[in-house]
Length: 65
Image (cartoon, rainbow, N blue to C red):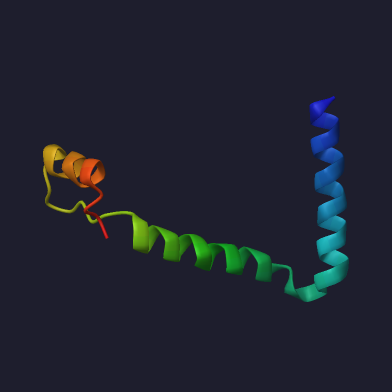
């Protein structure tokens, strides 16, 4: 039953997006991509050339970005 509901809702959304946005269906993807990129840049600390213990300390103390 869950699979049926998921399939029907995906079909409805895909048809709606295609009709509503026509040739600009890439825009929602682009917006979400930008949001997730900014989130990752702001919240995920740099781990290059750091030991596991240093990375663990960053996450424990929140001293990332």
